[in-house]
Length: 189
Image (tube, rainbow, N blue to C red; front, side, top):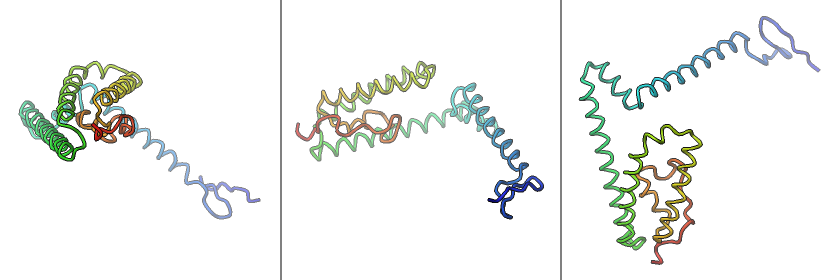
């Protein structure tokens, strides 16, 4: 059995290095600690300024000596444009589903109405959700998911169409995709 030999901070076994210099371990630990502290610090800074978007608006305005209100207008317009594009895509996809006989025109109207209702509710609940713990937010999202699955079932809508109701989270968003076999297929209606 070979015995490790300690030489100049190296552990060697039969001439091969087992572990790197203790100095490099200390340096790596220090760099890691500084990195974690930086991430925590920037997270606290974002929390103190509101949102990461607001912080970015502040940074752009100060870096390029621009009026913060003008920069905020650009960000707001960009958000509005993306939301309008997303809404148009949802409506086009649902229209195609109606054309293909996968859902009815009435189901499309219900999906679009529910989408608008949920967006208004999310906007109203935004501040209260930010004060909840992760566990409370997860519980609220799980309850909302169950409620949406029941709504889809009650309206004969396959859960695959709930991604259009969710308002942009879609597949892989918060909580992941909904199970496709939760409600009956709407093609039988």
